[in-house]
Image (cartoon, rainbow, N blue to C red; front, side, top):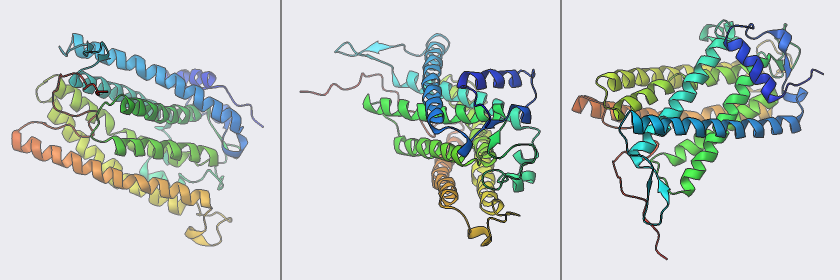
Length: 340
């Protein structure tokens, strides 16, 4: 059995790939996944990576606040009547948009750097996205293995959604309002479950395709938010239009197409599927169901995007804040103190 690298070793190898010092998706760096991976090590790696991701996100949050205060002229940390520190809502909104812009830009750059030249990564080659898992039709790799940089992308993405879910709960406990708390919480949980389950079963290629389709719209959304908060001319509207088009293509067209390929592809040329496309294991059915569960959330978010576009057309500028991190109204009053 192949020796499984530690999280920091995966990160170091991936960094070498990102700077061009090593080739991407090198079969010589194959790492165990699925039944070949030790469950205890997988859980420990997930906890360590999630903790590291939380630290990273908190550091980027601090940077976002500094930029909001020093470059955007936003109000800094304040205190309520009980001496408790809090951020004004506009500053929090800028901070959270900055964090998501930073992460999704890094994630999208990493994914495209690793998988850009892979035929199965693009729609024309999606008939091969399910050739791993129990199918195992990847000749250059041993069963249930993936290159080290590929594995790092999975660890990074899973840890991000777990860390984001924890931070979301902390915000809720601190009574920080969100218009879309339920949708975001459900999205984070479903996405983390999908990533973990596909890792455990070895269906990794469809997972990376879904990562890309999910992440390619987010930088434009958060760039539009930041530009609007900073009152920059034209950039919010241009970014938001690109965001809307990208969302419609990636999550409402290509994403369902990828699910269809996942449904059909697992049994293409596979002798373990004598019953055809319906002859799937319970785990495979669960994966498909989780993938489909995100579609209603995508439809809801696209409706919100269209509402913002409608307001923008009516008022000649982006006026709303879709998928907002907090309520949009400027409210500089401290949180209400609950009376005894």
